[in-house]
Amino acid sequence: MQVTTTSFGIEEALEQLGIKEVNKGTSTGKNWFSEGEEFSSYSPVDGQVIAKVTTTSKEDYEKVMESATSAFKEWRMKPAPLRGEIVRQFGDELRRLKEPLGKLVSYEMGKSYQEGLGEVQEMIDICDFAVGLSRQLHGLTMHSERPGHRMYEQYHPLGVVGIISAFNFPVAVWAWNTALAWICGDVCVWKPSEKTPLCGIACQKIAAKIMADNNLPEGISCLINGDYKVGEMMTNDKRVPLISATGSIRMGKIVAQAVAGRLGKSLLELGGNNAIIVTPDADIKMTVIGAVFGAVGTAGQRCTSTRRLIIHESMYDKVKDAVVDAYKQLRIGNPLDENNHVGPVIDKDAVKNYQHALKKVVEEGGNIIVEGGVLEGEGFESGCYVKPAIAEAKNSFEIVQHETFAPVLYMMKYSGGVENALELQNGVVQGLSSAIMTNNLREAEHFLSQAGSDCGIANVNIGTSGAEIGGAFGGEKETGGGRESGSDAWKIYMRRQTNTINYTTELPLAQGIKFDL
Image 1 (cartoon, rainbow, N blue to C red):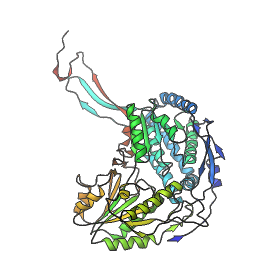
Image 2: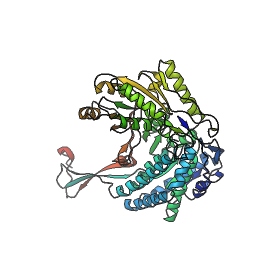
Image 3: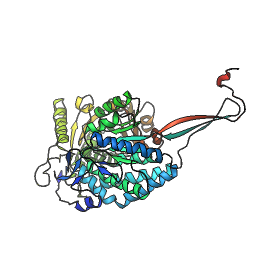
Image 4: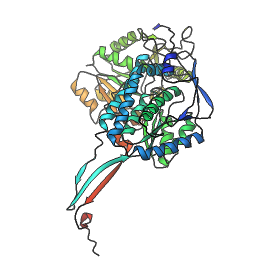
């Protein structure tokens, strides 16, 4: 592997985004407050403190909820196309600030600058999608069994939508939820990851400007900051009918139980253990590109990152050699340098998890074929840069069954038909993303059939990582079952109502029941 180091300043980007040395972490729009404790945001790029943020107290949270519930009463009455116009303006402001926001995403989270820009583009794309959707929030019309009656369905806003996002996509996942929730007539309260709070503050400032420019009430977009205790304020709050939470399976189970205990709704986007099946009819060049980007992109910290490469025994050595050769070309270093492929993992805890996975796979009988390790020296002072590693392993290994949020790829063989590969792919508790590399139509269709992949996302001849906003995003099994972004994912942000209108002078009952007075 090649290693490069480069230093970049982001002072101008921070200034454009309104990030200060110390930032209030609670906001209802133009109004920023919070007298809670300060915590620091450290960049995994260089280990430096970027800025400090004050946490949200219980008193602050109550102010936020008062503002949000009040704003909802006004916002829900705005016509949906008008709400779409606000989202359009928000998208335009994101276009204007794409470069500084992309740079902050890269610096605070550690993903490459190109991926940071791509994440902001996802925000812009979901705004465009939501604007069109604002004129298409349709219901159904049905025929009634009773003469002179009409039946139809319609959708109404839910209320306050609580959003808990993870560090790996510090802005896009919030936008996926927020753009749709806004056009549906909801208001949003967002708790970003405590590992990337400045991205949340930057986005809230952008949203607040749009709301103020349009003389809209405080509370349509709200921000709270802190650790899991701040998130618990929302998950336990009956005033928040929907909690959208992105994170680990462990976190998701806690959130799901808390929300279900008050009969609220939860939208969960949790862990992935994603595999690419490589059949004898695969294009090796395409396989290498898909597998390598899937495994090392965002330093293996995407929920859709490729964790397992399941290769037919007849192709195994050829594919292994090609992937190992590709890993030799990877450049690791400052993610703001666009010449680099791989930046740091988020923090020292992620480094420990990475080291544990490599130790564990060997203990279970695996074989390391691309050595890992933590990089040291000039440019790597943060201690968060690791080498992408590959291990030959079995699907049954305990460590392979778990998601390690780091650039560790497990290779394994299968024999026989594609159904044997599918047993391995589906033989984990997670069910987010999956892919097959094949030019065989029968294999591709079997992979996509009801007897095929059990994941929420199933791709043919592309990798597991990355998704367009036009399709609903989410997974099955312990991935949580949630769906965000495109298709009809908007329905989760609304309540459904069936209406029957009688336009006669009589009152017949359903099922022909007689009730004479």
